[in-house]
Image 1 (cartoon, rainbow, N blue to C red):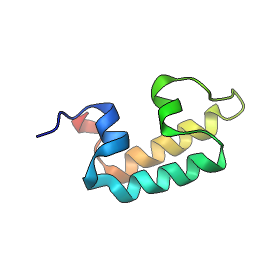
Image 2: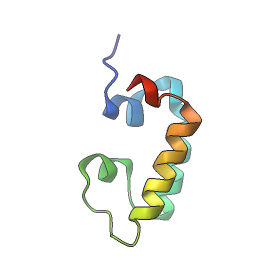
Image 3: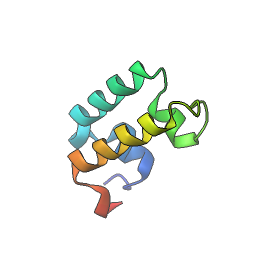
Image 4: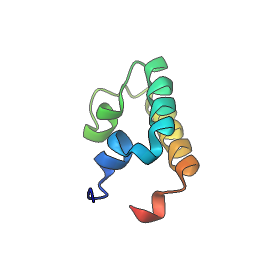
Length: 68
């Protein structure tokens, strides 16, 4: 009965654990984290397009965007 927040969805929801793992792996290549995405800090402008692309891919794979 956890509230469906962006933070829960991106970081904690056990239903999407494999997707979280993949997203963290992709972000590690960019030397950024999901937390950087949530607070909109620490993402170098040159990496922003890649971060947005990877985040969109995560959202498509989970098919959970309409629930947020």
